[in-house]
Amino acid sequence: MMAVEQLCNTETDNDVSARHIKQITATKFSRAVAGYAEHANVQKRSADDLFAKVKSHATGICLDLGAGPGVNTARLQVLFGTTIAFDLSFDMLKHSQARTAICADMDALPLLDKSVDCIFSNFAVQWSQNLPHLLKELYRVLKPGGVIYLSCVVDGSLAEIKTAFNKVDSQSHVNKFHTLVQLQQYISAAKLDISSLNQTCYQDSYESPMAALRSLKAIGATNQLSQQKRKGLMTKHRLQQVCAAFPLVNERAIVSYQVAIMELKKI
Ligand SMILES: C[S@@+](CC[C@H](N)C(=O)[O-])C[C@H]1O[C@@H](n2cnc3c(N)ncnc32)[C@H](O)[C@@H]1O
Image (cartoon, rainbow, N blue to C red; front, side, top):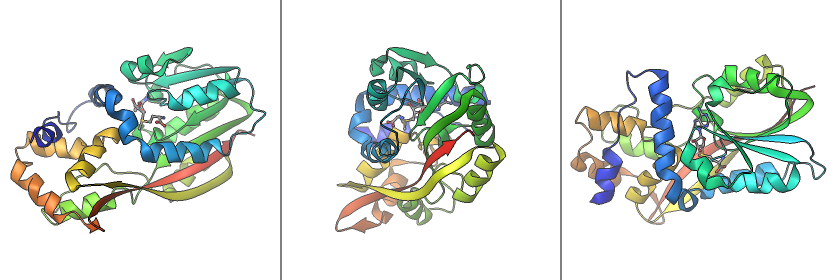
């Protein structure tokens, strides 16, 4: 029952300022540090697909945007002269053992124009409150000829969770993600050149629906659950109903993430 209470017992993001949302996001990720590795299977696969694109002759300064606990930072430090781990969560950065780190908001990028050679960002930019602006900012801080290796969770993700909740009520319970078409429009508006872009479905498999729901904490998609709790709607009974309605495959609870895997360039 501990897990049920923890899932319900978080603060609402509704009707709060953007700053407050950032604080909540940072707190959620800071709390997730210890268990992050356990929940980050999908993130690891997505990172591997991005690393497959990184040129072996990579040089200069690389920014690991939304670096989290630094799994990718460690790999990037081997490839680049300097790698900067950048994250909103101080606890994540402390865990990262990065040689150079910036604790800041990606929506207010404190970096000079044309200051980095490469940007690597895995499973993070969907957290931006203004993705079109962020992509323009990435263009600004990138040197001409610079490359961005980017993965972004897009619309269609967490479909199983939506299905489970839809059987209980008609409200949306998971974060809203941009569509692939929107993402392409934002990239084009930011004047970034698309070297490659493909959408991949990564799936995690859990022994129970409750374990699957708990995994949402790893990407912070508990916002809507939190709102329900604040309104007193997400009771243990309702959560049990959601678990009962969760679609199982071979008695396993699957969680799917639709992810855009991209290589972008500033020409
Ligand atoms: C799902 S984790 C991904 C971590 C890592 N990139 C990986 O591949 O495992 C998302 C990270 O983005 C960070 N993040 C969320 N919103 C952010 C923001 N506005 N600015 C900077 N980092 C942010 C979180 O703190 C978290 O560490």
